[in-house]
Image 1: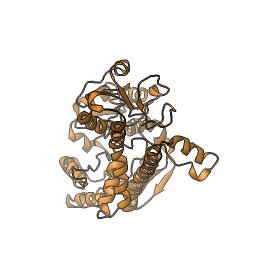
Image 2 (image 1 turned 90 degrees about the vertical axis):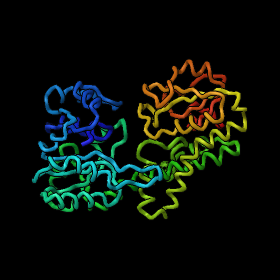
Image 3 (image 1 turned 180 degrees about the vertical axis):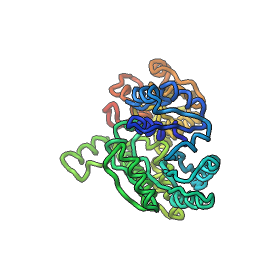
Image 4 (image 1 turned 30 degrees about the vertical axis):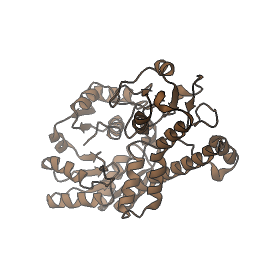
Length: 390
């Protein structure tokens, strides 16, 4: 269910490649059509040749017809818990989606929740299944891969498996042993928090690095030079990340889910949000101190949320663009991977380099490394190795 997206499709491809017969159910006809044509709807290195192979063999198919759910022995649900405009999670999103397909559920199936969920959602689904009077064990087996590493990490990373029922745990373990022999057993509530803790821990580390960057930069010092120096042959500092936009569909959302779970007492999480979400504002503020932005065209290099990606979900490049539209004479953007922009037409890199008065490297694409230009460049990633940048 929801299987044609960034989480579900690589898993479907991998399971089909293991010899399982897989059917994807998704609401998007366009996504289903692309899958059936053997074309990936998004960038995932190494996935498309395998997709073409399993589609051609008949092991993988896709449909927008919910009745296909009833043909499955194992139902894997790839529908996350969204955060609303007030940053509150909607724990009923998954039960609502399941309810739309519940007429096709049958005794003996296994229901696996795969996407990150708000703590307690697994239990909500269990109660829903009980109310339907069906004998279906529920398991929560969170996805743990990094985008663009799915075809590697689905096989190499340990898989967390949780279920309150012994048969649910055993069947879920057997399912994922098709891909990896590294299985970690937790209780459902433990597994739910394990996934949130993982993403939130990364978000906190990025916030610390970004705060350090601001401290150093405000005093005319090169944070990246400091970071490299303190980490050199010093193992306890090896995990300090560089500065940059902490974005994407998971880290911020999961931190806010954890904040809601703690009755909004998670002060570290809220502080991390202020730092990471505030970095685009910091960059604009620093630019304002050096330039009359009202008379300048600003070019944004990179609109996806991470390097080498076409994924713009929750990208802070768009927050940067919105802020600059209030401040600058004009804002233009470019990205070597993003083909469909939210509301503006992206330009080729050469056009942006020609038209812009100021450049901001928002996404650390390899294409921008060593970029040669005589124009001012705000490079929070220090991708060009130019030291103090804003």
